[in-house]
Length: 102
Image (cartoon, rainbow, N blue to C red; front, top):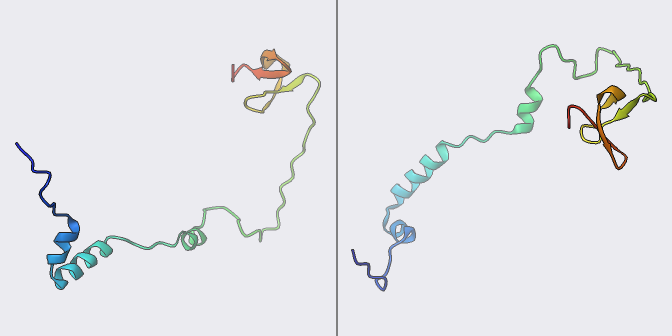
């Protein structure tokens, strides 16, 4: 099938110029009716988790006892978790790698 590339082409702009004002208004109303404007901030503020005290009104404090790394432990250079020496898979250039990451 032969195509004449020299012939003027019709685009969407040409089609819109021939439509009536009522058709254009109807198209715009259809396009806008499907979209819903949701404010995510308002949605997040109204969301409440069951059993969660996010307001801090309970007066409870979280206390955690931190124990320093012991001599027989190492920090994995990949997962950054502290492991016992028995979990050491390999050591290279001062970097320790645990069995899980190896």
